[in-house]
Image 1 (cartoon, rainbow, N blue to C red):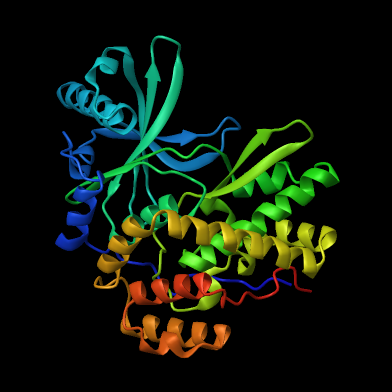
Image 2: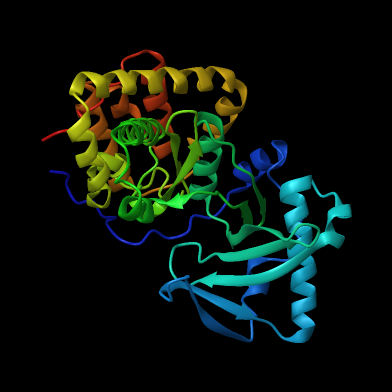
Length: 353
């Protein structure tokens, strides 16, 4: 049976230090935005945003005064152009801001902007959030070490992110696990690979509503990919289990399905495959990853108590004393990656009884 796993307490935002902002500027992640997060808080009124079934989504659609609305809409269209077309303003004349929603929970309390292209009525979303160093490191590691590319920009205390398309993990488990055995095996395989990616780079809190499932129809059946959408818990908590999605009870439906279809030998094979892919990505992005790690190991991303707990638990798990020399979360992440490259990375049995 999978264990419960919850954060010790709500994590505070971690400010972006000058050394991290310098890295972002050198790697095309910094931009001069026409509006800041605080400006969007000047909305005049709001109403609950309901889903298609009439249920509360915990988002509120916000409304601005006529004067502010024009300024906000123009700024949102320009930001979308920065994210999608590297700032090519020619696209602006075809864009309309359909809706702005505000999330009342979560560390970054994001605004979600719905953009419509008038040429074809196609819509897209992006987010404006409070800048948080943990999230930035998480996004960069996702871009460098996972099969997924992510686009985001930072300006002082404000960051903007593109939308990650997919079915929320909790909705997917409720409605789409009753599939063919062939697809169920593919889903379980992808969860194993996702579990591995999170543990190698120490991305925590991957409960079912913090990732999405992208489904691609294939010649036979479908292909599935799990993609993280919440990076606020990148290398913050002290418990090793917090970085293993297998230990969140919200993921039990996929875990139980994997136990039904896979033996431990198969699980180990998929773990080794994913580790090889991560190692290849490390080598392909060696220069940029090295620069990111140089910054991350100097940053204060957690408390001494959590750092001490995590390095102890990882040293015991890997049977490796290298973690004992670590003084920051960045050093712990780097040590974890180095063990992967040395093929000395230990993994627990995922589909356990």
